[in-house]
Image (cartoon, rainbow, N blue to C red; front, side, top):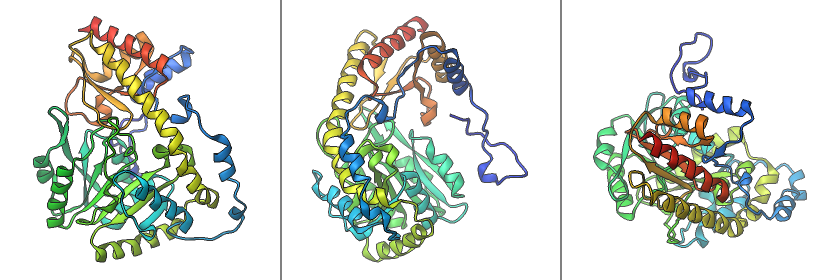
Length: 401
């Protein structure tokens, strides 16, 4: 990961003035890789390399549809694909009625974010974004010439939206608020009470919602949470895709589902269609395969949830002997956040852990935690690797505290 620090340049656009030199953490990773030493990676986020069983035959056959040889450019995507996505929402627990015509296909949620930012914001306008959360938002905002205004998630017997910080972050230039449901890496869902507060606050100010639901299906308590895809009170753009739903990130299949007041939805979709038509980024084989690829969730999600719960239990067992370290509450997704005593900067501790114990974890500052003493672990790491990595991690913390 590169440092997100601006550097001057006369030849290239200011929006790409990032410091591209590797930061100290990335440099330490490269050194370990060059040494050939085996590293226990507790940041693994690629499900295709985590030992899960896929229905390879069904997936590959779905990509060989003869209709792929016909070029049928549809800006919003093929109706068969959009209907399959609408059916996904309809058949989930807490069923949501989504019109296929309200869906626009994209090749990633990042592309979906860029479409919606371009739709809503002029250069210099602001988008509210949660913190802590995924660092990708800063790069997306730069590329779309918008500014981010952070609001805080606070931890008090679970994660909650700090609505006072939402109010303070909102200005006359705010065009949308990003909500991640459940958030990455905190694993916190937006409660029904919070959703109503969001609707009330942003409806009054005519501000749209952008809701990232890629981890929606991964509720650890087996209580499915409702989607924002049927939210009618505020203009809402719900983003999701197969990278998490079917654990197929390599397929590059995602979408935007638009909901809200009818007049606003119609106007938004007309403009989104032009944006999508300008790029026509998703290929025909994948669009035709979407119904089958969505079906893969029925076999892959139980495997993932079983792994996540088992690793979470293993982590809690290890933490029982280390009362100074605490695992923060997680409701969904596949990450865990640890709060540990602050003996040195998180980045320094993560580098020391990598070099001395050959264990890779993410320091909290990657996700904009307000304070030191936070680390993020992936719960889809293969169990044997996870168990040993956690043991080394906790042993190292004990020695430094």
